[in-house]
Amino acid sequence: METGRRTARTAPAATPAPNTVPAAAGATSATAPPRTAEPASNTALYADPAWTEGVDWVRRAGRHPADATGPTGRVPSLRTTVIAPHGGGIEGGTSELCLATAGYDPADLRPTPPAGPLYDFWMFEGLMSSGNSRLHVTSTHCDDPVARSLCADSLTVLSLHGCGPEQAGLEPGAAAVLVGGLDPVFRRYLMEEFTAAGIRAVTAAGDEEIAGVSPDNICNRTLLGMGAQLEITTALRAAMFAEGRNTLATRATSLLPPFWTFVAATRRAIERVRAGRTDVGQRE
Image 1 (cartoon, helix red, strand yellow):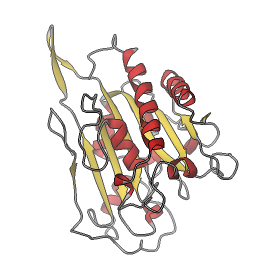
Image 2 (cartoon, rainbow, N blue to C red; image 1 turned 60 degrees about the horizontal axis):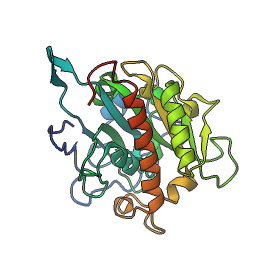
Image 3 (spheres, rainbow, N blue to C red; image 1 turned 135 degrees about the vertical axis):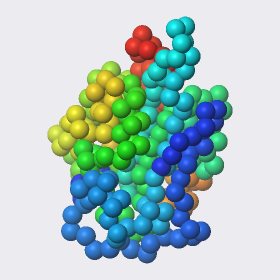
């Protein structure tokens, strides 16, 4: 939610490589067309002739098999999904964090760590050289059908966002992550793991876009009606990438140790919340 106000298809079973709608080689729109308000929804944005998929924006997603075999036959696979509704150039760094948290190297999509686990993911990414904030769709209005389907089929959903410290009510230059959403257990584990890793973690409050407490927020559209949302400040995200290479084109190959520290803490929290929900049904 780093913009004015805010918050791609199916993968093979073994090591799901995300399908994308690629841009033509080297193609990026120079600037965004003039706008006065953010799109009303993803559906509205996709239908807008001012934007071109694969040039101005792209969707990427990876999904695992929908079911598995249990003692009584086929049973649902209750998923974990990681999403970045404002990836690419909209809220810089959230695409790379989404992929890594889901278990993929952002540079080449290799499973990382190789032993897994891998999680489902979905991202909407701005590709323009400037003006990507015009592509911002607030999280309560996210209606992408793949994103909705993945979240609705998941026990656990984590939504990753970027914000400025002033939006989060923090001091200028603050390097912190704000933890929100309606899932109290997941929020607690995230707070504990970030704190243990030496990352400043703050309980999100106030503005829905920061706190993520609306049932309509895409992170809360889960099987349990609750998920978690992370708002990562500009300074914390900047510390994760090599100086001078924190750009849309070079971030994925310029990851610094703080990036992996953040990812490891996030994945530990996911593993803890999953472990506590094995009695709900089949795990991934």
